[in-house]
Image 1 (cartoon, rainbow, N blue to C red):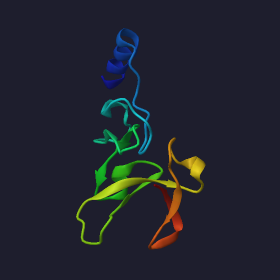
Image 2: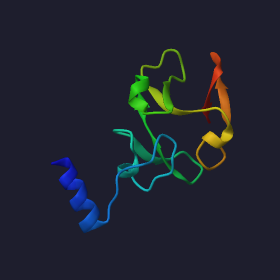
Image 3: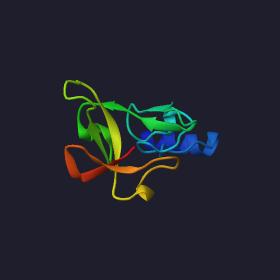
Length: 107
């Protein structure tokens, strides 16, 4: 039934499947491929898919759930990277996690 809905959506309305991962630009939350992610402006004027999380698997492929403070009960999904080119467009850097210098994220 879902595939029929998608065909009707694509043919009749011209809509498409969500394809924006964590930190990818978006026009609305419907563009975000990660379930329950929101399309928000983080202050650089570009709307991006972002999500609060508790577990890594909530963040989708290529992202992880990180907690800003050790006492936080909810974290934020961060896109993982090896180089800055792995990060979304804008003024993003690929920086290592403080507690794990071998794993980097887009900031």
